[in-house]
Length: 152
Image 1 (cartoon, rainbow, N blue to C red):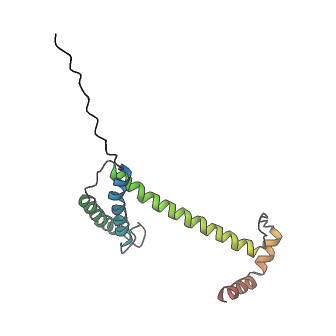
Image 2 (cartoon, rainbow, N blue to C red; image 1 turned 120 degrees about the vertical axis):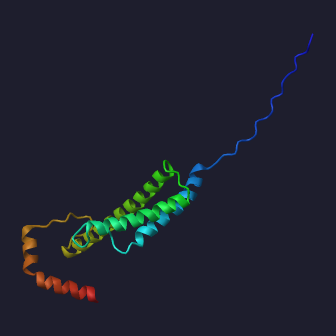
Image 3 (cartoon, rainbow, N blue to C red; image 1 turned 90 degrees about the vertical axis):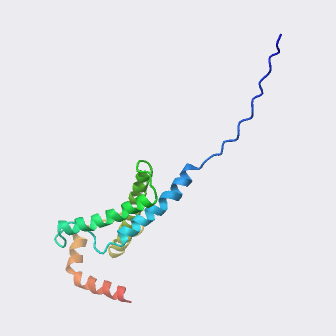
């Protein structure tokens, strides 16, 4: 009778955990910065208006497109996942930045208008027709007073 030999299982080798997010960020964030550099270095902002012809706009965009594609190729960017992440980063940076600047400008504008209309903090800004009418009558005096304050 043969004895059954008990198989001894070898211990599994510890699996090395990879930080995929860190690896992606290390590869893609420099690409995002390079693309912003290309956009920032454009001599003209290619918007289609009376100051530029459509062809001028296309020429600028195509030149930028070539530079961006060269960067993507040089960095061997995965066009399915990494490029989508790069687009997301570009959009988020612009969106968050413009939102913050816009919010700050609106808040500052509100502070100035509250000061002009003598609105106390926490009170609603009530612009009555009578008050606005009086300010319109005295608009030159108001302009001069504000100019003097700003120039100090």
